[in-house]
Length: 477
Ligand SMILES: [Fe+2]
Image 1: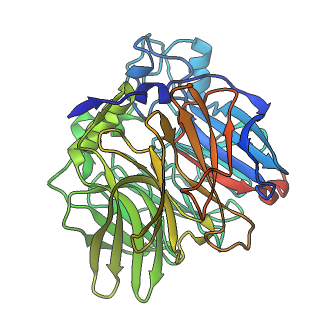
Image 2: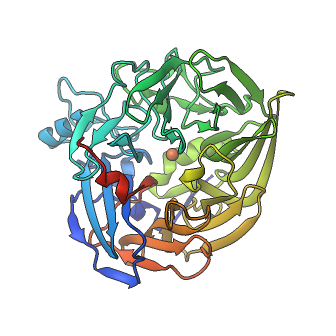
């Protein structure tokens, strides 16, 4: 059942302005030990369809990268479009001519390229800034200038048509573990990119059905591959359309959530662990090995029909009241071959993040965005333990939205919990956007600082932090 949600349309409304400015509207004090860049990616459709922004799907919009730089107590914003070949084509035509998930092209133009909207996440690795969306290859940008560089084909080793927006970077080895999926066989690919940018593993991995593989989790030795209870209706596929897999997505209440666990070694076999429930996972928090088991926390959708319906209706200002995801812990016994799934909380939670210095290794704390039934998430933040204890909650009033909580350590040798939470904020009443900086040890307290941008940016779902020294050491891009 769909219900109207106030301000849900305005939060995602495009604003095609590429900007450069120092942030001057600041409440509180910018911490002087916060030095680096918060990169964010948001769908920001430059050429709108005749039906207006409400005709777009939740996932539609040209990739729009913002770099919010902090240096010695001063903050600066730079925003640029990810100028993919399709972005440049549509810009040149100055007409909505490519078509998206939600809207057909308004005009017919010959020889249109595949629509690559690099609009979901942005990550720094091996000196390169990756702008990503899961129906296309990665797109590189300069991490300092945000100049567009071009598509990447995994040094000629790309196996499928696309790779995910959520690569995982092992903080100890520097390896990036990346997956990809496509509607046609072979459905799923796995890659390892070394810290110097070389591709050391590229292989097709057999999966039980053609699902939507949003991301994998990693541990020190394994990759965990969630296979959720949705599949792709092959009867609706169009090979020329990179978005066809998402258009043909359907709920499968008759299938149960499964996990493939595979060693991070080329050619290793996959062991499958089945849960008793028809669930789906977009985002995992962390996973790690301990005493012969793998523990993983993830936000889990429990109503497949509601989830699929929500993806279709959110951008139009409505939400499906059946949809929602909850914090779960998964315990895999590698000796017995069993998986125990435990719901940790009845709060609606999504966009889980951890201290990325612990990714794949034992950790204690997680942070997530929380919400209300029928109103989406993004209404508050929580801090939780891997045992499921909710340690703190920051609630926002109804006309305020808050995005993914990105953890930034106070220093590279700071304790796991010693740092800041950075989360984008949208004030629907004033129609302005900004950034909250919270003390990670007191996320329910007053923000350390609240910054307001001169230009409203469409709501951004994902992004990442890069410490200043990593950028200083760049040898060229
Ligand atoms: Fe995501």
